[in-house]
Length: 424
Image 1 (cartoon, rainbow, N blue to C red):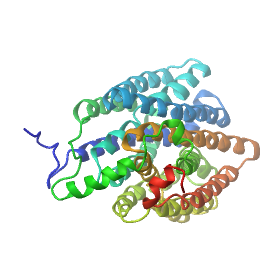
Image 2: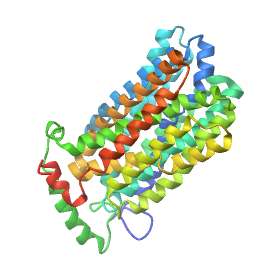
Image 3: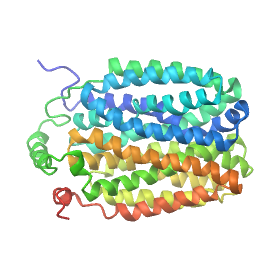
Image 4: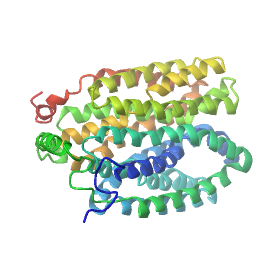
């Protein structure tokens, strides 16, 4: 007898429950990594350290967040999503308590910079990418794009929320409250929503099955059984990684240094936080639109436009003079802020197979976090050395424009097989 709610039909498909829960958990996971800005000034003042030193700790955290991605992808493949989420909840809870009660800068660096980042990596989108790729065939790109709305919601909701909470109860109590909510939500998702075994034909039903299954059978042969070392020899993987690197460099620069930069430029903390949060709010809706057109437009063209417009917005952000200018730039940036990670993971699944996507996405995200580490450090160093953020934000804009040029050279859907075999 078929399990109600799991089998695809014209009604509600259970796979969307997984997408919604994963997006919510991604929101608070990425929200902590991407909404560091409100913590920078009160943390540096409370700990008696410079912004440069704190930026260094955050940079270390970004790197370990990336290192944790392929490790999480490995355990997802071996032990499943539920196991990885439980480990993540435990690590994050311990690390935040250690951060609050750290008695010296070395302990603070370990708990906040290293252990917290490793824990958040286990509850990041990497934990869900392979699961969602297995639950969806026809709407895979759409589902993975919807997952990325959680990251945008993290910026939109968590940045002003953290700002308000820090103002009311201080950064230590804010982290304590976050730890309680995070652990509760993660365990709830792990035990009530995660299902490791999707229906036989995933999200296909009725007349879709013979048509799309035939196409998927061809697609399954498109990526030959490549090993990881063989994947590294294919050009599309590195082209995707180049865009992901630029994404990480820009996104984490924004999350760490945009609010302090705008405050230094004369904006209030509230206006600065609201301006940055607009990016996330707009991106939540624009991602849905991108998801709807992803099945009809070549992914490489969408990636090209995302990186190009985002790069221009970054170059404009350091020059805004009024709140209205700030809001216009962030709204335009928000239109293309999301979608690249969902499209990138969808392309990895289509190019190399759903079984490989968790591990490959984890390694690609390591490049994302290497970019994040460099931008976090560069933002702090540039400010301390030259008293400006224009250096870091200018580099981010240039990298995004370069990523746009690289992305348009990705293979067309019809060339996926020849691309991974080295014939294109």
